[in-house]
Amino acid sequence: MFDKTTMNRRKFLQIAAASTMLSSVPSPGHTGRQSLLTKAIPSTGEQLPVIGMGTWITFNVGNDQEARNARSEVLRAFFDAGGGMIDSSPMYGSSQAVVGHSLDRLGMPDDLFAATKVWTSSTSKGITQVADAEQLWGIDNFKLMQIHNLVNWESHLASLLEMKAEGRIRYIGVTTSHGRRHSELEKIVARQPIDFVQLTYNLQDREAEKRLLPLARERKMGVIVNRPFRRGSLFKSFASHSIPPWAQEIGCKHWAQFMLKFIVSHPAVTCAIPATSKVDHMRQNMAAPAGGLPDANTRRRMTEFFDAL
Amino acid sequence: MWDFLDYTFADFLLFSPEVYFRLFELYNKDIWPAQLASPVFAVAIIFLARHGARHQSRVISLGFAAMWLWVGYAYYAVRYATINDWAVVLAWIAALQAILFLVSAVRHTPVRYQTDRSIAGVAGAVLVALAAFLYPFLTFAVGRNWRGAEIFGFAPDPTMVATFGLVLLSMSKSRWILIPLPLLLAVVSGMTAVAMEAYSGLFTCLAGAIAIVLMMTRKHRPLDIN
Image (cartoon, each protein chain N blue to C red):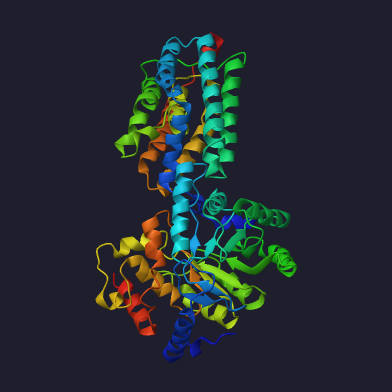
């Protein structure tokens, strides 16, 4: 088990520095597009851009053709900025179909990191959901298949391990959100052969720092962070404030960048998956790593600044 | 299966208010000019209910059965279900309400409706009128696009409000079977509205609460034997 007393400030700085150096290596396959800072997926070393794209709420637009085309433009901005990972779920209504529609319009990037989830209490339906998702996205294989909110996780994990052995998926993950079920998640991370854990971590929800993030790092698991803006509510906290000069020095031009820099600079975090339905917001999100990531001292200032709001 | 209890209602709100309200814009575009019949329905209901006669009451119940069936199919199942998987359940509830109205119409002693000057009677007529004439304006009173107006007979919320009003016009014992399902749908609609911070949607819940209180004050009168 990870000994939390070993994570002192010096150790943190060493890890953060190593992580930032690693993440400065441009990822392959972004020819003709901007490159984005990447981090290594701990279990394989494969590079993953530190900003991915969530589809919760934002891509659930049903059959509204105008809205579907607008989401395609959001996805275009994501790819243009060097984005690779798209995360969805069968729980998100029409989101997977809309992602598929957008990928069909834009063309399939070589470095697409397709990630979705199984979300059902039925084991057999979980297997069907994987096939359904492949069809909805218009892809042959997912890179990452996750078990949504730990629903029926033991049975789904057995199915996904079989798929991984067959080469149908490359990575397996489990997810939670809103800080729920962290103790159960911790047991899974400690004992199960998974590659990724997805959880909520942001300037307000920092509970994962205590045990889950260090444990995931110790177990060489990638960490995907959802709800980086707490469904937009964190922007309200910053509404009447200006970005402090020390944050501008590391390239924070918008609060979204401030929040994302904080998240992806944690040594255990592989990427964050903000969701948006607006092209300009996507561009702001994707510009988050520009100017460098905060060191441990700056991260501490960020939390102090936020806590004082 | 109890894993699902870990979710809150807000977790199932997987669409933005913008997308939700655009559903009504696209719906109205698809069914235009059928909406013009809505105020005619409302006037017809008040007119047919003026004497509390048996056959006219059957016609009213049949009309509401058709409206609920339409709302269940055309709105909940065909449109809302594209962004909310649970809308299929709402569609079945609406279909069940249509069946209840159908039964109310065809049974030997139909549920009877009659306008009168009692508080409940006046409130019932007012709710029917509000559903048809005020509800569409509520849409743009709160800053939404007028093209997304929610129309009685076609959109669920004003149809619920009119149903609450209609039930208030009845003194038949069996009127009570017509109220639980619209109330359930109103609660779901109200929770959705709160989750979207679109509080004008609570109007439907308020109408339901008024209907329940006034129904309890209105004594059963055996119009059924007339």
